[in-house]
Image (cartoon, rainbow, N blue to C red; front, side, top):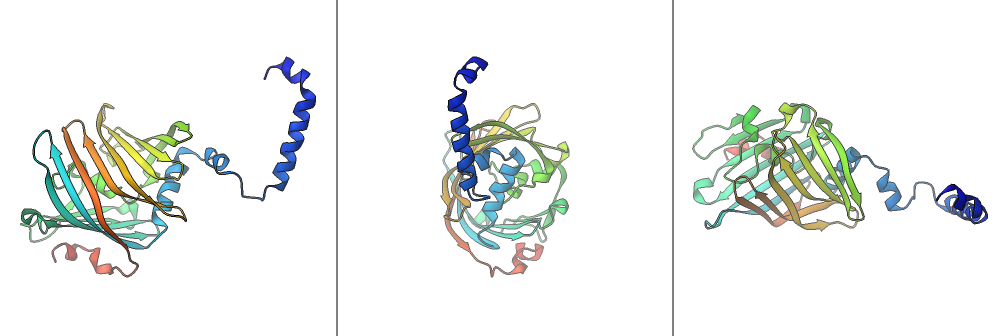
Length: 273
């Protein structure tokens, strides 16, 4: 509105202002409309809120997963695994164990992020007597012939937001488009990630870029389960690797929220059981 139009319509403007003021006084404190509350959030707060809602339903869960990988025109390979997750006050603990095929039976990974600043990963191959530590540059390697690196697996159940700088690239009626870059480049193999979050704070897509900002791969959460009290889970995830010309699909066949999952599951010893 320019100055002339403001002057000639100041009576109407004053009336509108009075109506808005009255409406605001009638609005209960803390009950602002969803759109207004959402637009006030920073990019970091949006990502934090997404994972807060993800974690709120249960202290622990177990998932039966079908994993499929396809490269170029080759036949699709299938594997089955179980993933256990326990949510702690300041992080998560995750165990992944493969059931099939026979060559992968016994392949297992422990991700201990109960204290994210002291994150540890332990890998056990079927031929190994003991689990071995995964650290440094090895975390950038692909895990179990999939398009998910060790680093990716660590952040499928929660993001260490304190390690990243976030920037809002765009906001629309569908949600937010956010850029994430590691504060310390040694904390991530990626030059940046671009994260799409919908208005229910569910992450729908992540693009992963290399250090030269070339696109490596795209993760899409296609089948999202949302809960009435807030929160979300992907039942179908597709990681399309442009650089490797490969596709990895994770299908959750069953999920159980269970607060009684034993603590001994989240240990190096359990990897060998």
